[in-house]
Image (cartoon, rainbow over all chains, first blue to last red; front, side, top):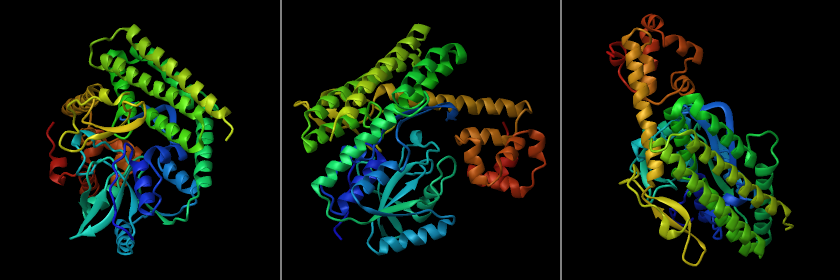
Length: 335
Length: 132
Protein backbone atom coordinates (compact mmCIF):
# COMPACT_ATOMS: atom_id res chain seq x y z
CA UNK A 1 0.00 0.00 0.00
CA UNK A 2 1.18 3.53 -0.80
CA UNK A 3 2.69 5.96 1.67
CA UNK A 4 0.23 7.89 3.81
CA UNK A 5 -0.36 11.56 2.97
CA UNK A 6 -1.59 14.00 5.62
CA UNK A 7 -4.49 16.25 4.60
CA UNK A 8 -5.41 19.24 6.71
CA UNK A 9 -9.14 19.94 6.78
CA UNK A 10 -11.51 22.23 8.65
CA UNK A 11 -13.26 19.44 10.53
CA UNK A 12 -11.68 16.37 12.12
CA UNK A 13 -14.23 13.76 11.08
CA UNK A 14 -14.35 15.03 7.50
CA UNK A 15 -10.58 14.95 7.53
CA UNK A 16 -10.33 11.36 8.72
CA UNK A 17 -12.91 10.33 6.11
CA UNK A 18 -11.11 12.17 3.31
CA UNK A 19 -7.60 11.01 4.23
CA UNK A 20 -8.54 7.35 4.72
CA UNK A 21 -10.57 7.21 1.51
CA UNK A 22 -7.85 8.97 -0.48
CA UNK A 23 -5.36 6.51 0.93
CA UNK A 24 -7.53 3.74 -0.53
CA UNK A 25 -7.42 5.39 -3.92
CA UNK A 26 -10.65 7.38 -3.80
CA UNK A 27 -9.06 10.38 -5.52
CA UNK A 28 -12.15 12.48 -6.17
CA UNK A 29 -13.12 12.86 -2.52
CA UNK A 30 -12.82 16.33 -1.00
CA UNK A 31 -13.80 17.65 2.41
CA UNK A 32 -16.95 19.41 1.13
CA UNK A 33 -18.06 16.25 -0.71
CA UNK A 34 -17.55 14.04 2.35
CA UNK A 35 -19.44 16.58 4.47
CA UNK A 36 -22.32 16.80 1.99
CA UNK A 37 -22.62 13.08 1.27
CA UNK A 38 -22.62 12.54 5.03
CA UNK A 39 -25.37 15.19 5.49
CA UNK A 40 -23.12 16.99 7.94
CA UNK A 41 -25.02 20.25 8.28
CA UNK A 42 -27.43 20.57 11.16
CA UNK A 43 -28.68 22.77 13.94
CA UNK A 44 -29.95 21.69 17.31
CA UNK A 45 -30.45 23.43 20.63
CA UNK A 46 -31.03 20.83 23.33
CA UNK A 47 -33.08 22.31 26.19
CA UNK A 48 -32.33 21.59 29.88
CA UNK A 49 -28.88 20.38 29.00
CA UNK A 50 -25.68 22.24 29.79
CA UNK A 51 -22.30 21.94 28.14
CA UNK A 52 -19.53 23.60 30.14
CA UNK A 53 -22.28 25.47 32.00
CA UNK A 54 -23.63 26.99 28.79
CA UNK A 55 -26.32 26.13 26.22
CA UNK A 56 -26.04 22.79 24.40
CA UNK A 57 -25.99 23.76 20.74
CA UNK A 58 -24.61 21.97 17.72
CA UNK A 59 -24.17 23.14 14.13
CA UNK A 60 -23.41 19.70 12.76
CA UNK A 61 -24.80 16.22 12.75
CA UNK A 62 -23.97 13.65 15.42
CA UNK A 63 -20.38 12.45 15.76
CA UNK A 64 -19.50 9.46 13.62
CA UNK A 65 -22.37 9.96 11.17
CA UNK A 66 -20.37 11.64 8.40
CA UNK A 67 -17.80 8.84 8.14
CA UNK A 68 -20.45 6.16 8.37
CA UNK A 69 -22.84 7.63 5.81
CA UNK A 70 -20.21 8.69 3.29
CA UNK A 71 -18.58 5.26 3.33
CA UNK A 72 -21.92 3.53 3.06
CA UNK A 73 -23.01 5.69 0.13
CA UNK A 74 -19.79 4.81 -1.71
CA UNK A 75 -20.08 1.10 -0.90
CA UNK A 76 -16.95 1.20 1.21
CA UNK A 77 -16.82 -1.61 3.77
CA UNK A 78 -15.84 -0.39 7.20
CA UNK A 79 -14.71 -2.19 10.33
CA UNK A 80 -15.05 -0.65 13.76
CA UNK A 81 -14.40 -1.77 17.30
CA UNK A 82 -14.70 -0.51 20.86
CA UNK A 83 -12.92 -1.87 23.91
CA UNK A 84 -13.23 -2.21 27.66
CA UNK A 85 -9.54 -2.76 28.28
CA UNK A 86 -7.02 -0.11 27.12
CA UNK A 87 -4.25 -2.71 26.79
CA UNK A 88 -6.38 -4.79 24.48
CA UNK A 89 -7.21 -1.67 22.45
CA UNK A 90 -3.49 -0.96 22.05
CA UNK A 91 -2.76 -4.57 21.06
CA UNK A 92 -5.49 -4.39 18.42
CA UNK A 93 -4.13 -1.09 17.10
CA UNK A 94 -0.58 -2.49 16.89
CA UNK A 95 -1.87 -5.48 15.01
CA UNK A 96 -3.65 -3.31 12.44
CA UNK A 97 -0.60 -1.08 12.02
CA UNK A 98 1.57 -4.14 11.45
CA UNK A 99 -0.80 -5.15 8.67
CA UNK A 100 -0.04 -1.76 7.12
CA UNK A 101 -3.47 -0.30 7.81
CA UNK A 102 -4.10 3.36 8.61
CA UNK A 103 -6.88 3.72 11.17
CA UNK A 104 -9.23 6.36 12.53
CA UNK A 105 -9.45 6.76 16.30
CA UNK A 106 -11.98 8.66 18.36
CA UNK A 107 -10.27 10.56 21.19
CA UNK A 108 -10.89 13.09 23.95
CA UNK A 109 -9.02 16.39 23.67
CA UNK A 110 -8.53 17.11 27.39
CA UNK A 111 -5.27 15.15 27.50
CA UNK A 112 -4.17 15.74 23.92
CA UNK A 113 -0.64 17.11 24.42
CA UNK A 114 -0.25 18.82 21.04
CA UNK A 115 -3.40 20.94 21.50
CA UNK A 116 -3.09 24.39 23.10
CA UNK A 117 -4.16 24.24 26.74
CA UNK A 118 -6.92 26.81 26.10
CA UNK A 119 -8.64 24.32 23.80
CA UNK A 120 -8.48 21.31 26.07
CA UNK A 121 -11.97 20.76 27.39
CA UNK A 122 -13.55 17.37 28.08
CA UNK A 123 -14.66 17.01 24.49
CA UNK A 124 -14.64 13.37 23.45
CA UNK A 125 -15.69 13.38 19.81
CA UNK A 126 -12.39 14.36 18.26
CA UNK A 127 -10.95 12.14 15.52
CA UNK A 128 -7.45 11.45 14.29
CA UNK A 129 -5.59 8.93 12.16
CA UNK A 130 -2.81 6.68 13.42
CA UNK A 131 -0.69 5.82 10.40
CA UNK A 132 2.35 4.10 11.83
CA UNK A 133 4.64 3.45 14.77
CA UNK A 134 8.27 4.47 15.09
CA UNK A 135 10.49 3.97 18.13
CA UNK A 136 7.49 3.33 20.39
CA UNK A 137 5.72 6.48 19.27
CA UNK A 138 2.51 6.42 17.28
CA UNK A 139 2.52 8.58 14.15
CA UNK A 140 -0.59 10.72 14.19
CA UNK A 141 -2.30 12.65 11.43
CA UNK A 142 -4.72 15.02 13.15
CA UNK A 143 -6.81 16.62 10.40
CA UNK A 144 -7.06 20.02 12.09
CA UNK A 145 -3.27 20.31 12.44
CA UNK A 146 -1.04 21.66 9.69
CA UNK A 147 1.51 18.88 10.11
CA UNK A 148 1.60 15.34 11.48
CA UNK A 149 2.56 14.67 15.08
CA UNK A 150 3.15 11.70 17.36
CA UNK A 151 1.98 10.28 20.70
CA UNK A 152 3.49 7.84 23.20
CA UNK A 153 1.62 4.64 24.07
CA UNK A 154 0.47 6.13 27.38
CA UNK A 155 -0.67 9.40 25.79
CA UNK A 156 -2.63 7.61 23.09
CA UNK A 157 -4.25 5.18 25.54
CA UNK A 158 -5.27 8.06 27.72
CA UNK A 159 -7.01 10.04 24.99
CA UNK A 160 -8.61 6.91 23.53
CA UNK A 161 -10.04 6.14 26.96
CA UNK A 162 -11.11 9.64 27.93
CA UNK A 163 -14.20 9.66 30.14
CA UNK A 164 -17.42 11.65 30.20
CA UNK A 165 -20.12 12.29 27.59
CA UNK A 166 -19.47 10.42 24.31
CA UNK A 167 -16.55 8.53 25.89
CA UNK A 168 -14.62 7.00 22.96
CA UNK A 169 -13.97 3.60 24.65
CA UNK A 170 -11.00 3.08 22.37
CA UNK A 171 -13.21 3.39 19.28
CA UNK A 172 -11.17 2.48 16.20
CA UNK A 173 -12.47 2.41 12.62
CA UNK A 174 -11.09 1.98 9.13
CA UNK A 175 -12.14 1.08 5.60
CA UNK A 176 -11.36 -2.52 4.68
CA UNK A 177 -12.68 -2.86 1.19
CA UNK A 178 -12.93 -0.09 -1.36
CA UNK A 179 -14.17 -1.02 -4.79
CA UNK A 180 -14.22 0.89 -8.04
CA UNK A 181 -16.49 3.90 -7.50
CA UNK A 182 -18.56 4.85 -10.52
CA UNK A 183 -19.72 8.33 -11.53
CA UNK A 184 -23.25 7.07 -11.01
CA UNK A 185 -22.47 6.12 -7.40
CA UNK A 186 -21.01 9.56 -6.72
CA UNK A 187 -24.10 11.24 -8.12
CA UNK A 188 -26.45 9.09 -6.10
CA UNK A 189 -24.37 9.67 -2.94
CA UNK A 190 -24.70 13.43 -3.45
CA UNK A 191 -28.45 13.22 -4.09
CA UNK A 192 -28.98 11.04 -1.05
CA UNK A 193 -26.84 13.30 1.13
CA UNK A 194 -28.82 16.36 0.10
CA UNK A 195 -32.19 14.66 0.62
CA UNK A 196 -31.28 13.49 4.11
CA UNK A 197 -29.98 16.96 4.98
CA UNK A 198 -33.26 18.52 3.82
CA UNK A 199 -35.10 16.15 6.11
CA UNK A 200 -32.84 17.01 9.07
CA UNK A 201 -33.14 20.76 8.55
CA UNK A 202 -36.85 20.94 7.69
CA UNK A 203 -38.77 17.90 8.88
CA UNK A 204 -37.78 16.96 12.40
CA UNK A 205 -40.85 17.37 14.64
CA UNK A 206 -40.65 19.77 17.56
CA UNK A 207 -39.05 23.18 17.75
CA UNK A 208 -35.43 22.52 18.69
CA UNK A 209 -33.87 21.02 15.56
CA UNK A 210 -33.18 22.23 12.04
CA UNK A 211 -34.17 25.71 10.88
CA UNK A 212 -36.79 25.85 13.65
CA UNK A 213 -34.08 25.26 16.21
CA UNK A 214 -32.39 28.51 15.19
CA UNK A 215 -35.60 30.40 15.97
CA UNK A 216 -35.81 28.50 19.28
CA UNK A 217 -32.36 29.81 20.22
CA UNK A 218 -33.36 33.34 19.20
CA UNK A 219 -36.29 33.19 21.64
CA UNK A 220 -34.01 31.97 24.41
CA UNK A 221 -31.55 34.81 23.71
CA UNK A 222 -34.26 37.43 24.17
CA UNK A 223 -34.87 36.11 27.67
CA UNK A 224 -31.29 35.49 28.80
CA UNK A 225 -30.45 39.02 29.96
CA UNK A 226 -33.38 39.14 32.39
CA UNK A 227 -32.97 35.55 33.46
CA UNK A 228 -29.21 35.33 33.98
CA UNK A 229 -27.97 38.93 34.07
CA UNK A 230 -25.80 40.52 31.35
CA UNK A 231 -22.55 38.79 32.32
CA UNK A 232 -23.83 35.19 32.43
CA UNK A 233 -26.00 35.84 29.37
CA UNK A 234 -22.89 37.10 27.59
CA UNK A 235 -21.07 33.88 28.46
CA UNK A 236 -23.95 31.92 26.93
CA UNK A 237 -23.56 33.92 23.72
CA UNK A 238 -19.82 33.26 23.84
CA UNK A 239 -20.58 29.55 23.93
CA UNK A 240 -22.74 29.86 20.79
CA UNK A 241 -19.94 31.69 18.99
CA UNK A 242 -17.44 29.03 20.00
CA UNK A 243 -19.62 26.15 18.82
CA UNK A 244 -20.16 28.08 15.60
CA UNK A 245 -16.72 29.40 14.79
CA UNK A 246 -14.14 27.38 16.65
CA UNK A 247 -11.51 25.37 14.89
CA UNK A 248 -13.21 22.57 13.00
CA UNK A 249 -16.15 24.46 11.54
CA UNK A 250 -14.58 26.08 8.48
CA UNK A 251 -16.30 29.29 9.62
CA UNK A 252 -19.95 30.36 9.82
CA UNK A 253 -21.09 27.24 11.67
CA UNK A 254 -20.20 24.83 8.80
CA UNK A 255 -22.40 26.86 6.44
CA UNK A 256 -19.47 27.88 4.19
CA UNK A 257 -18.41 24.25 4.05
CA UNK A 258 -21.89 23.22 2.96
CA UNK A 259 -21.97 26.02 0.37
CA UNK A 260 -18.66 24.68 -0.98
CA UNK A 261 -20.25 21.23 -1.19
CA UNK A 262 -23.22 22.58 -3.16
CA UNK A 263 -20.82 24.35 -5.53
CA UNK A 264 -18.94 21.09 -6.18
CA UNK A 265 -22.22 19.19 -6.44
CA UNK A 266 -23.48 21.67 -9.06
CA UNK A 267 -20.60 20.69 -11.36
CA UNK A 268 -20.90 16.95 -10.79
CA UNK A 269 -24.68 16.92 -11.12
CA UNK A 270 -24.60 19.54 -13.89
CA UNK A 271 -27.27 21.46 -12.08
CA UNK A 272 -27.22 25.27 -12.14
CA UNK A 273 -29.74 25.49 -9.36
CA UNK A 274 -27.33 23.92 -6.88
CA UNK A 275 -24.86 26.73 -7.65
CA UNK A 276 -27.53 29.32 -6.88
CA UNK A 277 -28.48 27.62 -3.61
CA UNK A 278 -24.77 27.56 -2.76
CA UNK A 279 -24.91 31.37 -2.88
CA UNK A 280 -27.85 31.35 -0.46
CA UNK A 281 -25.89 29.10 1.89
CA UNK A 282 -22.92 31.49 1.68
CA UNK A 283 -25.28 34.28 2.68
CA UNK A 284 -26.37 32.22 5.70
CA UNK A 285 -22.71 31.74 6.66
CA UNK A 286 -22.01 35.46 6.31
CA UNK A 287 -25.01 36.23 8.52
CA UNK A 288 -23.74 33.79 11.15
CA UNK A 289 -20.44 35.71 11.10
CA UNK A 290 -22.35 38.99 11.54
CA UNK A 291 -24.23 37.49 14.45
CA UNK A 292 -20.93 36.36 16.03
CA UNK A 293 -19.65 39.94 15.79
CA UNK A 294 -22.82 41.30 17.39
CA UNK A 295 -22.59 38.68 20.17
CA UNK A 296 -18.91 39.45 20.75
CA UNK A 297 -19.86 43.08 21.38
CA UNK A 298 -21.97 41.82 24.26
CA UNK A 299 -19.48 39.50 25.94
CA UNK A 300 -16.77 42.11 25.54
CA UNK A 301 -19.05 44.28 27.66
CA UNK A 302 -19.20 46.98 24.97
CA UNK A 303 -22.97 46.69 24.40
CA UNK A 304 -25.15 45.08 27.05
CA UNK A 305 -28.68 46.51 26.66
CA UNK A 306 -31.73 44.35 25.99
CA UNK A 307 -31.87 45.82 22.48
CA UNK A 308 -28.41 44.40 21.81
CA UNK A 309 -29.59 40.90 22.75
CA UNK A 310 -32.67 41.47 20.58
CA UNK A 311 -30.41 42.39 17.66
CA UNK A 312 -28.67 38.98 18.00
CA UNK A 313 -32.04 37.25 18.15
CA UNK A 314 -33.30 39.15 15.08
CA UNK A 315 -30.24 38.02 13.11
CA UNK A 316 -30.93 34.41 14.05
CA UNK A 317 -34.53 34.71 12.86
CA UNK A 318 -33.22 36.07 9.57
CA UNK A 319 -30.67 33.24 9.28
CA UNK A 320 -33.38 30.67 9.92
CA UNK A 321 -35.44 32.12 7.07
CA UNK A 322 -32.47 32.10 4.68
CA UNK A 323 -31.61 28.48 5.51
CA UNK A 324 -35.25 27.46 5.27
CA UNK A 325 -35.42 28.92 1.78
CA UNK A 326 -32.21 27.14 0.77
CA UNK A 327 -33.35 23.75 1.99
CA UNK A 328 -36.86 24.11 0.62
CA UNK A 329 -35.35 24.78 -2.80
CA UNK A 330 -32.99 21.85 -2.38
CA UNK A 331 -35.87 19.60 -1.42
CA UNK A 332 -37.67 20.45 -4.66
CA UNK A 333 -34.80 19.45 -6.94
CA UNK A 334 -35.40 16.19 -8.79
CA UNK A 335 -32.15 14.34 -9.31
CA UNK B 1 -16.64 35.32 3.42
CA UNK B 2 -14.05 36.42 0.90
CA UNK B 3 -10.53 35.05 0.91
CA UNK B 4 -9.12 38.55 1.42
CA UNK B 5 -11.36 39.07 4.47
CA UNK B 6 -10.22 36.04 6.47
CA UNK B 7 -9.20 37.36 9.88
CA UNK B 8 -5.59 36.74 10.88
CA UNK B 9 -5.81 37.71 14.55
CA UNK B 10 -3.63 36.53 17.38
CA UNK B 11 -5.14 33.58 19.24
CA UNK B 12 -4.36 30.56 21.41
CA UNK B 13 -3.62 28.62 18.22
CA UNK B 14 -0.37 30.55 17.82
CA UNK B 15 2.67 28.24 17.61
CA UNK B 16 0.35 25.21 17.39
CA UNK B 17 -1.48 25.37 14.10
CA UNK B 18 -3.55 27.52 11.77
CA UNK B 19 -7.11 26.55 10.95
CA UNK B 20 -8.77 25.90 7.60
CA UNK B 21 -11.53 28.32 6.58
CA UNK B 22 -13.82 27.92 3.58
CA UNK B 23 -13.84 31.16 1.60
CA UNK B 24 -14.62 32.64 -1.80
CA UNK B 25 -11.63 33.46 -4.01
CA UNK B 26 -11.36 36.35 -6.49
CA UNK B 27 -13.30 34.35 -9.09
CA UNK B 28 -16.21 33.75 -6.73
CA UNK B 29 -15.29 30.06 -6.34
CA UNK B 30 -14.89 28.23 -3.05
CA UNK B 31 -11.38 27.78 -1.80
CA UNK B 32 -9.65 27.30 1.53
CA UNK B 33 -7.48 29.70 3.47
CA UNK B 34 -5.51 29.24 6.66
CA UNK B 35 -6.30 31.56 9.55
CA UNK B 36 -4.35 32.30 12.74
CA UNK B 37 -7.57 33.15 14.56
CA UNK B 38 -10.47 35.58 14.86
CA UNK B 39 -10.71 38.15 17.61
CA UNK B 40 -14.48 37.69 18.09
CA UNK B 41 -14.06 34.05 19.08
CA UNK B 42 -10.76 34.55 20.84
CA UNK B 43 -12.59 36.78 23.31
CA UNK B 44 -15.32 34.13 23.70
CA UNK B 45 -12.67 31.58 24.67
CA UNK B 46 -10.88 34.06 26.97
CA UNK B 47 -14.16 34.83 28.72
CA UNK B 48 -14.90 31.12 29.13
CA UNK B 49 -11.53 30.73 30.88
CA UNK B 50 -12.14 33.74 33.11
CA UNK B 51 -15.40 32.08 34.13
CA UNK B 52 -13.54 28.86 34.97
CA UNK B 53 -11.13 30.87 37.14
CA UNK B 54 -14.06 32.58 38.82
CA UNK B 55 -15.72 29.24 39.57
CA UNK B 56 -12.47 27.84 40.92
CA UNK B 57 -11.97 30.75 43.28
CA UNK B 58 -15.64 30.47 44.31
CA UNK B 59 -14.96 26.85 45.20
CA UNK B 60 -11.99 27.97 47.32
CA UNK B 61 -14.23 30.38 49.22
CA UNK B 62 -16.82 27.67 49.84
CA UNK B 63 -14.15 25.31 51.18
CA UNK B 64 -12.80 28.04 53.47
CA UNK B 65 -16.28 28.57 54.86
CA UNK B 66 -16.66 24.82 55.43
CA UNK B 67 -19.42 24.52 52.84
CA UNK B 68 -17.63 22.27 50.38
CA UNK B 69 -14.87 19.67 50.19
CA UNK B 70 -11.66 19.96 48.12
CA UNK B 71 -13.28 17.75 45.49
CA UNK B 72 -15.31 20.75 44.34
CA UNK B 73 -12.16 22.81 43.84
CA UNK B 74 -10.39 20.17 41.74
CA UNK B 75 -13.54 19.45 39.74
CA UNK B 76 -13.72 23.10 38.73
CA UNK B 77 -9.99 23.34 38.14
CA UNK B 78 -10.03 20.28 35.86
CA UNK B 79 -13.21 21.48 34.07
CA UNK B 80 -15.03 18.32 35.12
CA UNK B 81 -18.73 17.74 35.48
CA UNK B 82 -20.23 14.81 37.39
CA UNK B 83 -20.32 12.59 34.30
CA UNK B 84 -16.62 13.14 33.62
CA UNK B 85 -15.53 12.69 37.24
CA UNK B 86 -17.72 9.63 37.62
CA UNK B 87 -16.14 8.21 34.46
CA UNK B 88 -12.58 8.71 35.70
CA UNK B 89 -13.19 7.54 39.29
CA UNK B 90 -15.77 4.84 38.72
CA UNK B 91 -17.75 6.37 41.60
CA UNK B 92 -21.47 6.94 41.09
CA UNK B 93 -22.61 10.52 40.59
CA UNK B 94 -24.87 10.63 43.64
CA UNK B 95 -21.98 9.47 45.81
CA UNK B 96 -19.73 12.17 44.34
CA UNK B 97 -22.38 14.74 45.18
CA UNK B 98 -22.29 13.55 48.78
CA UNK B 99 -18.49 13.70 48.85
CA UNK B 100 -18.67 17.40 48.03
CA UNK B 101 -19.81 17.93 51.63
CA UNK B 102 -16.89 18.45 54.04
CA UNK B 103 -18.16 15.93 56.59
CA UNK B 104 -18.64 13.15 54.10
CA UNK B 105 -15.22 13.95 52.61
CA UNK B 106 -13.51 13.63 56.00
CA UNK B 107 -14.85 10.11 56.43
CA UNK B 108 -13.56 8.84 53.07
CA UNK B 109 -11.02 6.01 53.07
CA UNK B 110 -7.63 6.47 51.45
CA UNK B 111 -8.69 3.99 48.83
CA UNK B 112 -11.59 6.14 47.66
CA UNK B 113 -9.55 9.32 47.99
CA UNK B 114 -6.84 7.78 45.82
CA UNK B 115 -9.38 7.30 43.03
CA UNK B 116 -10.22 10.99 43.19
CA UNK B 117 -6.54 11.95 43.34
CA UNK B 118 -5.82 9.83 40.26
CA UNK B 119 -8.70 11.41 38.37
CA UNK B 120 -7.42 14.90 39.25
CA UNK B 121 -3.81 13.85 38.53
CA UNK B 122 -2.60 14.93 41.96
CA UNK B 123 -1.13 13.05 44.92
CA UNK B 124 -3.25 11.64 47.73
CA UNK B 125 -1.45 14.03 50.04
CA UNK B 126 -2.37 17.08 47.98
CA UNK B 127 -6.02 16.11 48.09
CA UNK B 128 -6.09 15.33 51.80
CA UNK B 129 -4.19 18.42 52.88
CA UNK B 130 -5.67 20.90 50.45
CA UNK B 131 -5.64 24.39 51.93
CA UNK B 132 -8.16 26.71 50.35
